[in-house]
Length: 317
Image (tube, one colour):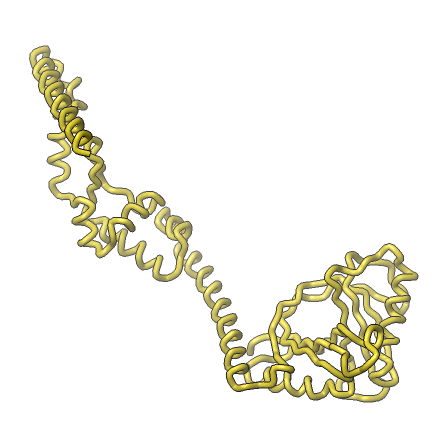
């Protein structure tokens, strides 16, 4: 370490000696212009220039910003030193740059990324950038409120068997069939008939993976007999329609959901639980609820083992 410092000092002394010799020769030959870039000349000019500037440590104290942060801002192109000594690599800043630091810190505290801060400093419309950030934060706030309401729901000691959750359901291409069933026990048969009809009409069409299908109720009131329903199955593409089989693209939705374990006759209990949650947490229902049958008579012998997911499309009031 000491050896390196010694060599650096020797090199600087040699440069200074060569500069003095060049300067003397230049004056002697009336060729002062050629010496303007010599280390000694530049040093004299730089000394005058640096008179009203602050070294990075001094500027750090004035701006209440760490040296590490100032170097980072320089690296990212946010704040360049007014002057960098080419021989010592010392960074110098002007007092006017305190305003730039203040602006950078303010935008950073507002949550803007380095990329967006650079855009603002380069002259982009700050209002547009801030409005975009505001929309992002508002969306995050909604998600935080959803998570908070979920935590409160669990802290209140609600029945974990009927645990409510919220999920986003994407848009799907579905084939669907509307019809009337005598009662709830006939829903499975209706769904199988719709699937069979689609397979006969469109043998090349495949269901999406993972599978998504549902039943929705189309009556304007609760009914236990002669129930008007729609069965829909998500598929990979639109196919050929018939008089009773149609295709459409669903809208993406946010749904409040609950798993119901047991017989369909007891679905009412799960509906009451989810409706209470919707009311207590400031949501409104925007479409008919959906029932997705995960386990049923096709793979379970005991109806107490049936598993149904109930989905209510909602939005915040």
